[in-house]
Image (cartoon, rainbow, N blue to C red; front, top):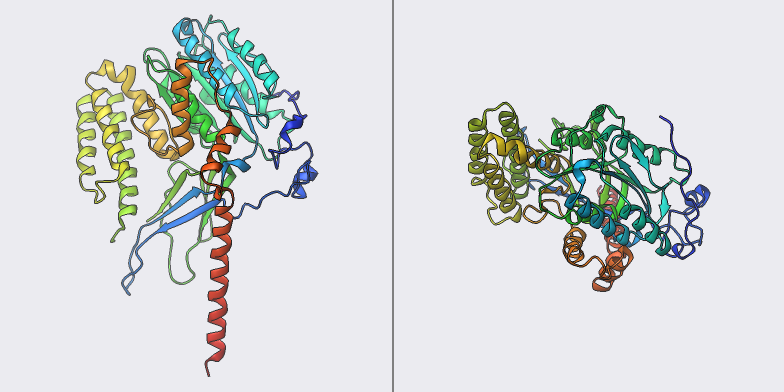
Length: 489
């Protein structure tokens, strides 16, 4: 696949004080400095690993289930720059309110990005067109991006394949690439009219898809494209919902990435344990000897990813196992409904509802959201027609959210907030205000960071400090063991 290679490389001058690893030279990054000679912060403490297990175990051989939870613990103030490609449908069915909502949502995105971020816009109908190369988002370029989006006109068919390929070509040809977060956000409201986007090789690029409206978009196709990518999710946006909300949730995650290409390796204690199974959802895993390595992609600040290692179970572990069983039952119900067995599908959802009552932690907000999710699915399975218009898309977005352990829109973005981060909550409120008055001032991503640091001045260093304190404690414990062993006759 050919690619573009005309991305903007010159970092805006005002950007240098805000960016520590997105300068124009790979040598500077390798040396641990940027073009202002500011030291690159260590990754130490950027990820917090929590282990939930039984502290005591019987002496005889036994099986235990352990929950490993990874949380982005660093401040987003030290985030890498973002290279975002927006791939937007402008087919004839987008004419009117849908196109207007998309333009407003894109204006929200444009205003939130800062000058360490780059944006490219691709539109598609019968074919695809790259409207601009990757460009840094400055005060001047924001006006040009807005003009491009305002000029979009709806006409023609829905060539999702060309749109996706064009967006990927923008990223494949980058000359400034090291240490930057990449993402494709693809929005469509229709059935593909040419080719099959499932066959497009997306490589390691996360692709986040948005299906807009109940009547026409191909939820199964958009879900398949997202699942094929590294960490992408499918987001269902029902009729009447403003796109700014769903777009804001994706943007909040991308603008708070604290660790890229995160991998977790689980190794059993020699001669004491055997790993029977690691369940990381839909994330890829590799075995090497007795160890298992899971690749999670990018991790956002305060977003948790969990790997369950399979009988007494701690409440946190029980809740996580129940969530995974809940997600599997949604998948089973969807398969039944897809086969026109709607009665069996509804019975499966009721079975999932009953299973939630066995969870010990009934006060957990997670349990409340799981209940809401099932109630909505039952409502959307009142008839086969309603299921095919809305229920399938809702179920698919739920499944991809659970499998990725990332937030995804399920019709709207307000009811089920599973895996939402504090920044997502903030951006959702900002998006609601923005939809009412797009001309009102909107805080930039840099403004959001300043506000968060003002509220918690120690946030940027809390993670590293905790990391080094833990390392010091372990070192002292090791010294104590050596001294004790040496003192024994």
